[in-house]
Image (cartoon, rainbow, N blue to C red; front, side):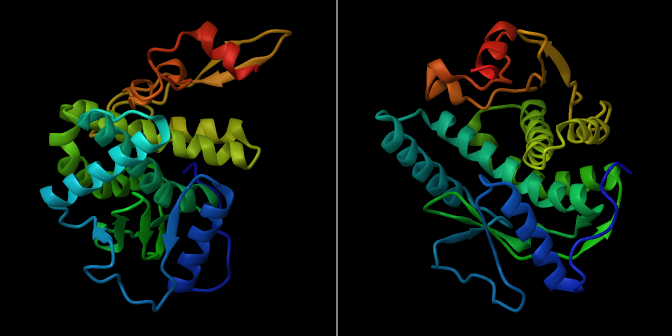
Length: 262
């Protein structure tokens, strides 16, 4: 198992699970998740939160429209529907994957988190989650837990993002890997995070296609940079054409080095 040794808070059960998730959120400054405190009731209908379990087509339409409005407000032009849907799905997959991979990376435990424990804010697209107790597990258990959780999300968004199953699961793989990589960088241990991510998705692990495939880029003055090429595109370039992601299949190695050394 490549996850860290058991550790973390000494409290048990839901309190420990909540503390574990709070630590992940604290480390990952861009992870926008509201963690329900143990004992707090689940959100009720009408509170602006949509349950991940049983997302209806109407629910997804509302979420995508809200994402499109946010993109237009921030960029001055309205995105096409499949672009807004892809951007929101990328955000949800990355956030959801970190809810599993974060506690696992830090303490070697896979949360027993189900779709019934998570809600999406209709206004912001951010997640609210009820902490779930973790159990020891390795790479296979992490993959299985993430796949079980994100599968319904992929199914709900598929008609809007206009991608086939391989491309959808490629998005999930990219976001699982990038979450682990990001967490490691935030902790100052990028090398370890890359080893862990490579062990999680070494290839041949359906439904996730492809492999982590991290590699080194030679920079200037003897510097080296770690990179990988995403299995799929998150369509950020469709919003800001001059700012394609540094791991985008559209971004050449020379451009990657230039941007990494700015």
